[in-house]
Image (cartoon, rainbow, N blue to C red; front, side, top):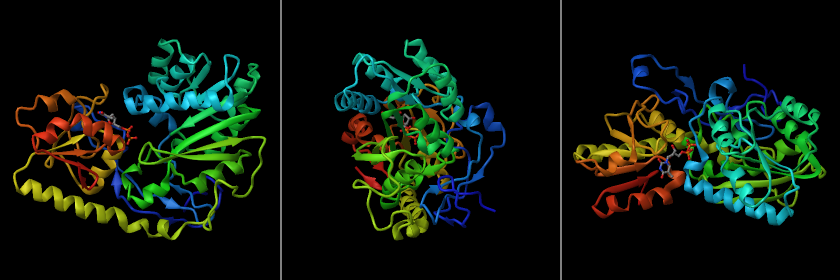
Length: 403
Ligand code: TYD
């Protein structure tokens, strides 16, 4: 039996949005010793709610298992650092923030955004449950509380005398939250009456339109569109007052919401005939991943038959969904490169392809004929790094496109 919808609580049966088979947890990179051991595979079958159109996966793993020791570091991405730099500057101007303002960032990671606010003379406090990552920010003198966001946390902070935030930012975290109600209620409790909550998430409309099925993995419990996010916020007393399309992670949305603006229905910024119900495109998504798999296999097999050497660029979680769904292993990709120190020397879950330092690609005595960009959300940043390979005639593939 299916669980209740994570957003609206509906118990109506949810149709399968797509079926990506059985997959390991996408961020469970394997050490060499673990190669000897069996790996756990779980069904990767998101569903869509007929009542609020939230695309979702069940709460498979405990949040503590996934997020207390995490291998993602915001500050290691130049693109992300620029994004939070622009965000902090924009918020200071738009909301008139100053040294007396109270700002919280949920899932502050290693402090990339906190650092930008500090540079502007505005104090910001991070909340980050992954202890290994929170520590990096703390060592840099960036105030970071190591906790999950939720009602318990909000109560604790308020009872210690906290006075309500003028701004709470939550970027790319809502998808990871198993208990949406607890998370958003905690945020509403911590906002000052006229405070602003900004939330950013990859737009699931792009997932559907561009067949970004690889952004689906077990650590992402929910896939929001503007409509379903609006719905989720409105149900918890956060009225959306503005929205922006932002060009990051394959197309994202930023919503601005306030606790003193109650909107139970779509407002000026979020309209559409299909509000609250799955669209025809969402219902037709089911066959899309298999179409992608066929096309990718055609290309890779042809190159393999021609004797070409193929490697991957980036070891993102989404690469694991793609490789495992498409059945691509170390027999096809010799290795993938990734600059994250915690990933180098490990192996991709499922496909067990080795992860090496980007320098190994530069120094490879037998350089690859084809480089597949697995971290396609950083395509422009990565393709600049691959210029010399392109100049010597290597094929650079990003999703199904030869660049
Ligand atoms: P990320 O954007 O976090 O995607 P996901 O959410 O699917 O995991 O991952 C990007 C990965 O790509 C990360 O492991 C770092 C790596 N990367 C490089 O190795 N070099 C680069 O130049 C860039 C931009 C990313």
